[in-house]
Amino acid sequence: MKNSFKGLMIVLTVSLIMLGVISCSPSNKSLEEQTDSLLYYDETMDNGIIRMNSIKYSDSIKTNTNCYLYQIERQPDSTLPNVKDQYSELVYLDNRIDVHILKDGKEFFRHSFVKSDFKSFLDEGFMKYGILEGFVFDRTTGNSLRFATSVSFPQSDMYIPLIVTINNQGQYDIQRDNIMEEASSNTSEE
Image (cartoon, rainbow, N blue to C red; front, side):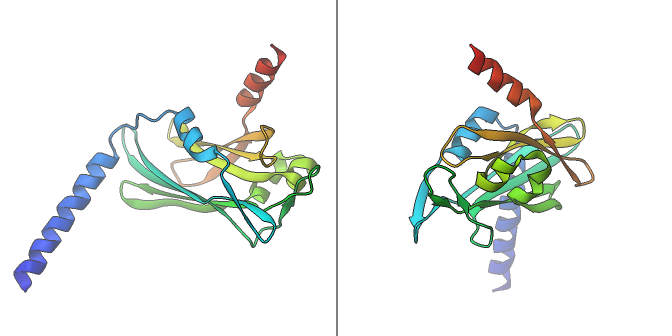
């Protein structure tokens, strides 16, 4: 009995080590590929309220000095205020996005983001009619991890692009992504 337990423990340990090595290999997924997998609008209706499907996504980032494993989970949250479309009167459930990051195998960051976390960057219309829609890894900058996120009008291409930067101390900062807005306005002018 003791030998089979010891053998099982060895197999589990080797498996975890291999998972760590494999997961910290450089990711070949571009931001566009991640965005496509996270931001498509698949929905269900429950008691007249439209809800986006839950999505769970994880990947790894290897920097010069650290290995980060992150998991992003978007889920409709019935504890948040419903969002009513200003034109069609359809009602949507807003989303909560949970971000969990391990740094070299130890918990580094954990936070549940909701639309109100971004209220200082949103006008009255987006606060009232928008939902928290996406959250994807963008890139590393210095000792920080940068994630792109958005608050959007449901089922539209109208959104506010935002950046969440998590520094090497596990603290986050939010900024409006002006580069995305400039690219968007340049494309619409053509």
